[in-house]
Length: 181
Image (spheres, one colour):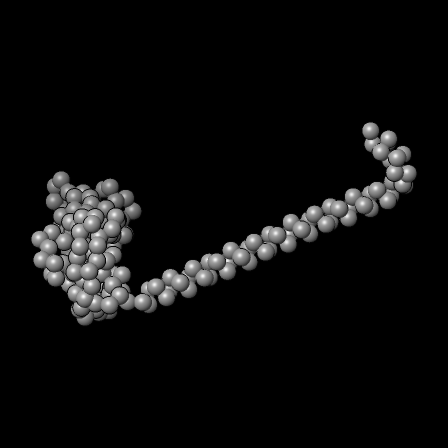
């Protein structure tokens, strides 16, 4: 089939090779151009979305305001949206005389009061208190100590790290452990 095609064209093989090479270069150029154009468009869309998000964050709704709870809302997220501080959930809870601030219902209408923005002072996660000392008793393990001291057993890793325990699964009655704050 190839031989019949070459005879019909009556061109030397080198011309055909050059033509096919140019065709490959042309297709590769088009694909490369499209790749970069699409990436530029995508970057532009991402930058536009970021700018819109920043503008939306800077726009504070006028207060006091009425707010209808949507799926996935919490008092924290509502306060974050209206005050740029989730700590103002307390203001919303108090303004609506909420018995249980953890319980909001989709469709519930809340009053978002005008209030001073609550921001924690300093680093909330900073620990300034010295570690507490705890003497291990029979039956203790790091999980149970963490549950008692931190209200979550998952904090056993803090205790292990603070005391440089090589094998946190082995502690003995009488050991004195430092409990970080």
